[in-house]
Image (cartoon, rainbow, N blue to C red; front, side, top):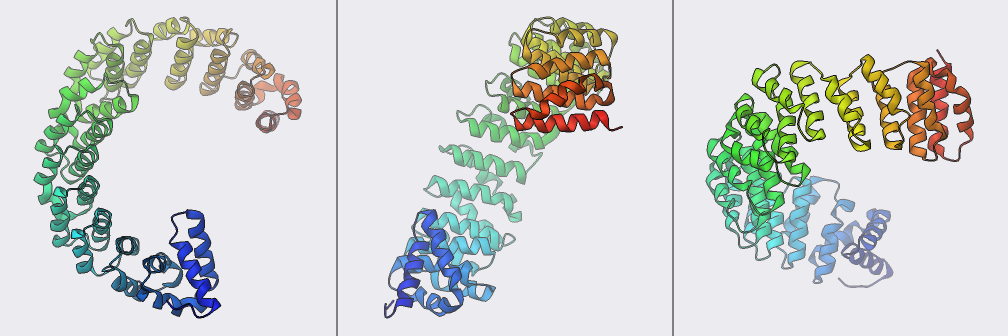
Length: 455
């Protein structure tokens, strides 16, 4: 570009800013271009023929500033998809992907580009522009054997969005043995979407549950959730997965087991007898999510009410409540008296199952005066969940307002607000909090007083 005047100098400077790798300079360059877009449009069009790659790159990146029609986007793509600079070709492919338009034949040629990141962008553009094309499916499937892992992973992911990619199942199954985790993960995700319920795919995903990479195991568990009863082929591996240390992976695996349905009961009952506390806990949770009123499930859960782990006992209480509607008060009270951490868990359990009985109310009043602040806070929250309305309880909840911990104070204030007029005895204490240093405390106090005083 011939720099013959100050206007051209300024325009080129703006394009070079847009081509900068630093996001600050890129945005500054775009702002300059937006400000003078009308005056610089002709310079922008001519810049695609410039001999300097950075100027052509800046021109592509500035397309959204100048190109307000599909015709102009097509013009830019016709000028840049075959550019000699790989960065320009990459940005041209990205422009086609975001625009959803472009010459598909030219983009398909870039699937064989020497630069791997251009091939990767060409995959995304092809899928975005014409996912229904059988040719697109063939080209993308061919890239499953690309020498670059990033390209193979992108191709494997892209196949899930291509209707004609069902025929690529065998190629994707082969990718499950790829040495790169990102490829195995992408292939498992696409297979789960393309062939949900397929027995061969379910068996293959089952093998991935022993993969050395966490993300691959997680993807396999997630995929098996959509297989329903067919995932029984992976049941043994899913049960084994219940003992892993990561709670998220255990949770996804448990959901896949639950999706199998009643066919998983026998294996879960066996898992509930495991010597591993974590396995028993997850097995109980899964049993509680299966269809209700199954006698085998209920009998197993009743035995677990006396488990050596208080966590398992509480989960058994909740699971029984879900499956039979029965709540074992004795177990909950026993855990409630077993120390601060079990007590907090027991109180949360009481709130979840909405357990209201004379014994429970008595234990709540004791918990509201417990020496551990966490227990008192949990007890107050449970009072709100059970919608208890008693002046004695309100006075005990109000004790939280004297704490130095602002979070505890806010909990107490909000619970008193929920209790409404039954917490009128706490109005003087709440009024004092209107001048508290903490803003959250002041706001909570205002709202609680409104709920207590306004009928």
